Length: 269
Image 1 (cartoon, helix red, strand yellow):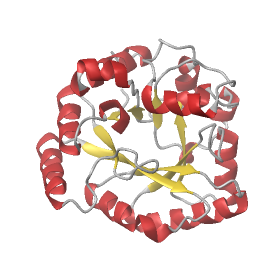
Image 2: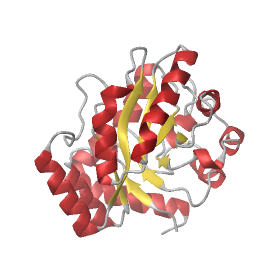
Image 3: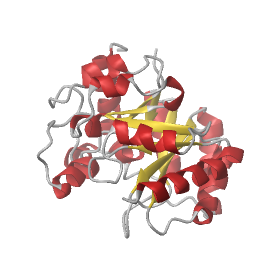
Image 4: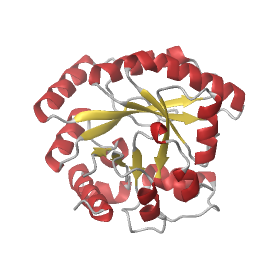
C-alpha cells in the first residue's frame, strides 16, 4: 500500500490547518505546503512567522496524526542566497517535514551546481532533503539534467530528484531516464495527468501546471508506465490542481476525487 500526500495545489484554497483536517478525513497520511510563493505576487500559505497559524497547525497535526511531507518552494536563480531560506528550513524542522521542493532558474549550470550543493549542506542539519524538480520551462528541463546537476554537486546525501508526471509527459524524459535515477535520489513523486507533448509554449506549460491538470487517465501522459517504473513504495504526492473544477466542488470534495482516482489508477482502491 502506497503512502499519499495532499499537495498544496490540490487544496490551494485551504489554510494549512484546514488542509491537515481535509487530509485526515480523506485518508491522506501527509500534506504538502507552499510556504513561500513560487513567483512574485503568487499565492502561498501563510505560516512562516505567523505564530497563531503555526500553533493551530501543530494542534491539527497532533489531533489527526497527519504529517507534513514537503515544503514549497526554493528557487535557485542567479542571485540565490541560501541564508534567505533559513526561516523555511527552521519551520520545516519544527513541523517534521521531510523534503523541500527546489526549482532551478539559473541557466549557468556551474553556478547552479554550486548553489544547489550549498543548499543541500545548509538543509542537512534540519533533516530535509532538497528535491530538484525538473520542469521543461526551467533551467533543469528533464530527468537527465536534474541527475547531472546532482552528480556534479557531488551527490549530497540529502539530494533528490522530484518526478512530476506532468513534466515527465511534457519533457524529453523517457521511462529509461526515470529507471536510471538512483533509488536513493527518489523521495516522492507527484501524480496528475494532462495532454502530453513537446510543442507547448512556456505560457501553456505554466498554465497547465498551476491551473488545469487532469485526473490520472483523463489525459494521455504515460502515467501507468511512469509509476510502474518508479519504486512501488515511493510516497505519492497527489498534485492535481484544476481551479475551475475544484472551485465548483470545494477543496475537500476535489481532494477526495483526486485521491480516489489516484488510488484506483495505481491499484490501491
